[in-house]
Length: 317
Image 1: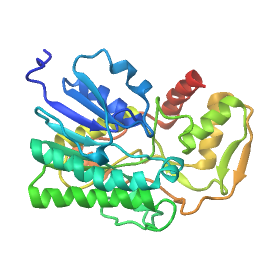
Image 2 (image 1 turned 180 degrees about the horizontal axis):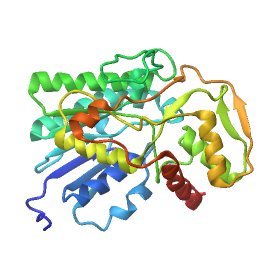
Image 3 (image 1 turned 45 degrees about the horizontal axis):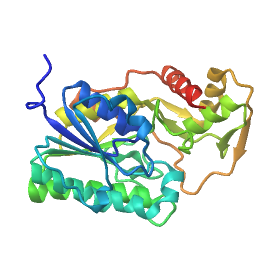
């Protein structure tokens, strides 16, 4: 039986109008959690929240968490997902990206402290940089260029993790840190700039697929429903130490491009371009900790997930 409004726990989700944030809001509502979503629409979209707007347990507030977070009433969970998350997005907003990972994180932790709430930080596999260890376990400290073009995102997230640990040690805030590896699914922006949206838009339009370098660099692609299950598992059963959430099935960018061309039934060719600065050569999570601690692992296979995402892109292009 569903909990009454008065007894429902309440979650505040920053970046709630984003790709992952909006799916997370929906999943929390399905678990009888009331949700207040915050977003300033720098990269999020009101369209992502359209399916939730009729739910009386859902509230949206347009807000920039860098400017402080002031919320009345009880809050059980604070989930910080606000941040540009793809290279074109943080290239266009480097200062905001730094601020939301540092000042925004501090403000959301302050809210969690004031409300005695559990705080969950959406960190990233980018904290590992261009890794020298493969696959990447949580114990790996990373290989990051702090002054390169990706530094505004990578270092902001590393600082966010340090903030979470400091608030836990100093103020006993109940914190969680998840490191999200490449994730795809419905509600990704066509202009996101990462491989899956780029390749799918190009394949659907019959344009050449842009592969950087020789295409041997790898990524591990997790479908969004699996990722959200992992987030909720971390919220319920996690501890203060970081945990990787991603799909350990590794694919090269060339293989990914060829697979998407095949799934789309496209005649597109492949166009090789120069590799961007500091682009990671390999990226694959070691999810041993997630399996042992959370009982979590991905369930949606690569091609199944790509088909679902492709269906979404066909509907919006």
